[in-house]
Length: 159
Ligand SMILES: CC(C)(COP(=O)(O)OP(=O)(O)OC[C@H]1O[C@@H](n2cnc3c(N)ncnc32)[C@H](O)[C@@H]1OP(=O)(O)O)[C@@H](O)C(=O)NCCC(=O)NCCS
Image (cartoon, rainbow, N blue to C red; front, top):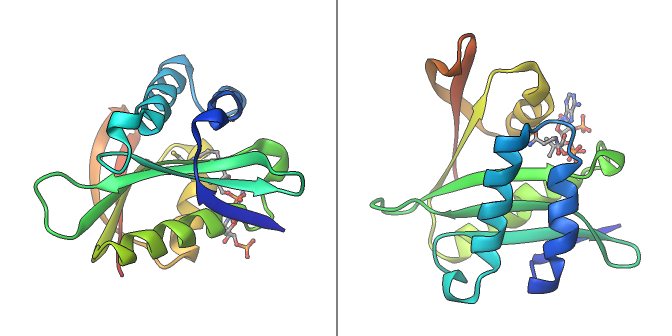
């Protein structure tokens, strides 16, 4: 069984490893994901813009994470910025647990709705399926946002 909990500073090497080996992100995307994780683990940033939950299994090893935070200049809107489950642990419900844990944490802090932006590219098919299976609805598309034929899709869920 997996556990979902707040990330700790010592998780950084595992998180970097998960990002570098996701099989989905190019170098630039990996760099941004790592920057975000570092910002979220930074003490001054803690409990501010970026929050991190990790999924751990068995011996406590980190096998996935989710990064989210309150959307600036909104009332009750939160963003999920990134979610990754390590390749060998996919398809076991960990992504769903991370998303559910995030929703519970957002609710606790008075959040009313969650937004997730993603791309229509094939390699994000699992992510889109995860969001839909957790009750998110695609509410907007920006054509060719990431590059030609890679549109941005915004998923939305009212909590
Ligand atoms: C997206 C991701 C986090 C899903 O994590 P996961 O732990 O494998 O997902 P779960 O096992 O919790 O799946 C929950 C539901 O999502 C859907 N789903 C997940 N992976 C799927 C896939 N490959 N194909 C179709 N549906 C899928 C299913 O509806 C599934 O429910 P089911 O198993 O009852 O059918 C994982 O595939 C991943 O890390 N992908 C690479 C990183 C990425 O694309 N991140 C998102 C962009 S930032």
